Length: 352
Image (cartoon, rainbow, N blue to C red; front, side, top):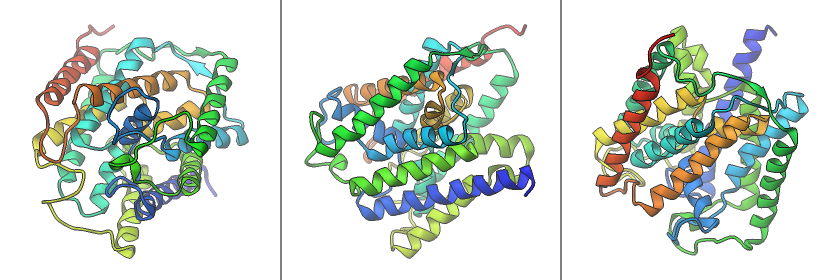
């Protein structure tokens, strides 16, 4: 098999695993329209750690830990663990924070947007358009002035990386016993698939995504740059697999109104996902891809994940996230401030 055909094969396999897992995890107990959602899972995780007081959003999602550990195990098996850092620092942290804020205003990360589309949720169309627009602007910003966030690369501390991986493994063990972590008894976080199914799905999807380098925003970027749909074959396969799985399991619900976990403010859904897409392009991957990269040894991705966690805390404590009723004023303000930051970062510097 040629290198190119092998790449397409692994990307399609990762997409199929993601689409199937996203559909079945909802069928097995995750909230409707939320088989996989990194931003929602980060908010649940922050609640389980006691970082916010919303008792309906407290649960350590095993999928979240599985993505990271799956990426680590696959990278370890293929000898691709490369502990490195470019010193992104505060800029990388803010990019992670902005990706979660944008996702919260849309109500879902790029993967959830994909799964909402596959489930027949027409309110997600504006989010999909926003993601494409954000990726396009992100590409233009990178082709112009240098953002200077990831301009250097150096070997990081292997000890720090393996301590972080060990910490994630400990969290998996603690989640088995639900102590000393917080777990919701009611609300969205109380709805979840069986732990071992969730963790297993996370490990498989994380491993295959590491092997294929799958990324939602990366796939959109590649299609734009090459004008070849096969560059984003994983994205296409994920959407089709989730669609057929939803139809087979009776979860497909085509419509615009009364969709669970969605709102009708299409303009802000567009802008929220555009913010996430733009930030993800500069960060080098969507929220899901950052988890997999962290498992490979990318210390910048760990900083971005910390930013994502901070974003989840702000979303809950400051009421930034949208609800099915509306997008709050503070959420709208946060998106606009995020755009201003990215515009300064990408376009506000002189060319060398």
